[in-house]
Amino acid sequence: DQQVKQNSPSLSVQEGRISILNCDYTNSMFDYFLWYKKYPAEGPTFLISISSIKDKNEDGRFTVFLNKSAKHLSLHIVPSQPGDSAVYFCAASVYGNDYKLSFGAGTTVTVRA
Amino acid sequence: NAGVTQTPKFQVLKTGQSMTLQCAQDMNHEYMSWYRQDPGMGLRLIHYSVGAGITDQGEVPNGYNVSRSTTEDFPLRLLSAAPSQTSVYFCASSPHEGVISGANVLTFGAGSRLTVL
Image (tube, rainbow over all chains, first blue to last red; front, top):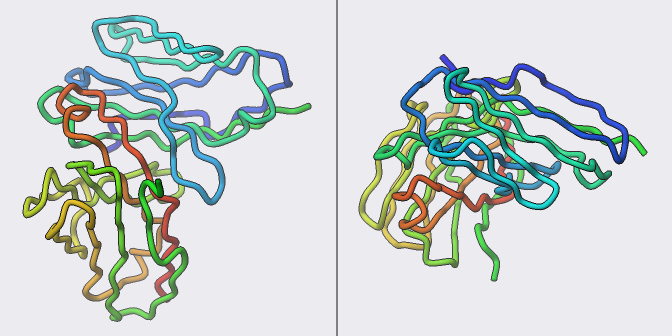
């Protein structure tokens, strides 16, 4: 059973607007969350992360929000650019078991010009 | 600096054949792992290694073997391929200190697409 779920397989957004990607998890032991971005025919690349002791982490156009009580996190991309068109994976780990990342199924983002 | 290199990029096998997917990294990372990506399933951990001579099972280890004789290399072996092993395989690595802090920021290879007929 998947412990990390990305329920929206795809998202289409106009260039310049905000992209919001959602991720839910079931394991309350998760304490570190990461987002990876993947282009076709390439491996995923690290985008941004957040520890469970925080509720927000920002890096340029990318912000991740964590709501531990709801077991929910989201990734905001503002403003969206054509180069952001990719698959985005949410991942989580448990302290002390950090070797095992659990990934969601991914959300394909398409940024329209 | 090549990062994580996977070979081959594409492979077609017949059921029952064996093969090895190669993975090499030149970043002196202690931690290496193999994931498979299937539609609707995300990436699932097959096997991982925290250093030379040490390997352990991930979420979906059945049908796969690994070994880690050097820091640089982490091959994945399919002893008797099955159609259920048709997938895209990714090798990844990270420095040990990144893993133990919880920030397991993996560097991935470009992937190996395997089809088992």
